[in-house]
Length: 215
Ligand SMILES: N[C@@H](CCC(=O)N[C@@H](CS)C(=O)NCC(=O)O)C(=O)O
Image (cartoon, rainbow, N blue to C red; front, top):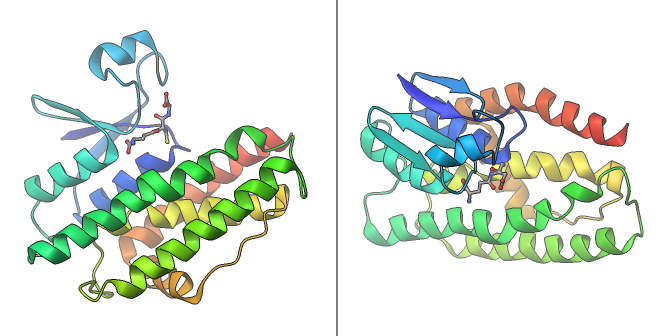
């Protein structure tokens, strides 16, 4: 059985679990030995990041590398389109999440409990995140190859990042404007059983983390 190294509140582990659930995979979850980033964990995973998987002899980190591997190892249902152009657009959507949207959300994590409405970081990140949401809207709008009924590899990071944005809005006083395209996309993705199940399981861990920071 596949092993997933994870912690309950890790956003990228939730991304991997959405994929595992959609593929109806069997897996077990363990915490990184010695904790995330520990010397012990780094002996196995040089970057020290989660998620990481062990599948037989294969030890693999990075949610995107894991997603591509799982889509090949567990081909049903396919989570990359057949057409090469559509496949590339799907990967572009995935990378937009990992390299453009989530890193801006991540900048808020250290400020929960200390920053609030109107503080510099919140004003700056509200602006940047609104820009990213607009860019995502344009990306979705211009992608005529996307099958809005199917859950694809490029969709798996978004539900959890959207949930974090919601959860941060009140305590931090974030001022977000959600473009209609993004709202529609969010609803389409959330309708998949794998996403709904992961969000239901993940939200308590996310809330517990937030409450631990708010004190
Ligand atoms: N690009 C990586 C990012 C993974 C990542 O940053 N994971 C966080 C947890 S959500 C982590 O391991 N943080 C601890 C660290 O960077 O040492 C991926 O997609 O797997």
